[in-house]
Image (tube, rainbow over all chains, first blue to last red; front, side, top):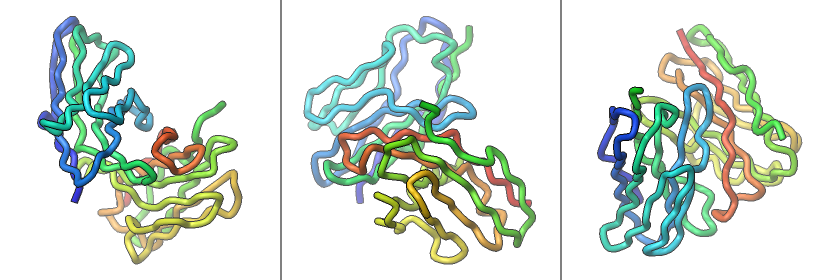
Length: 112
Length: 115
């Protein structure tokens, strides 16, 4: 079955550090890929999505590039802030299908 | 736009009691989804309604869990005879329709604790 793997369960950084959260997927077709962010006490909210190979999604300084060759969608940010502390989820969905497959999530803690 | 509203935000029940969770989707959204979130299992799909009709309940535990959408402004998730393993955050999401082009907007969730 389809799956999403996030390598890092937790990441701790200092402000202005560079962030990478790895996301790899296994899918039989050509899914749309998503990054969601969840702050404490809130539901997940969409950061951005990408639907095609080599398409870059970006929002709030975060970015990720759809790479079909390596089946990856790694999240990056050049300089994190304390306010970026949250849980980040990588997910996939197929066109015409409402079901997400979510990764396990990565908890980011940024220390001022 | 108040977003997706979920009530209560926290619920504590004793083992064997019933729990009913409420969701009010964003006005005009025809698709409503329920998810369960735990540390061990992460985010799990439970069930999906479109235009109030149940479309897919493949994620629902077959016993004790049921969901309804009696009108376009609210949906309920009912858990009968709650067990400690039902403790989780239950998230409701809505979207304009169920297609992948439309973002799912999540509510803040209801944290259910079964003692």
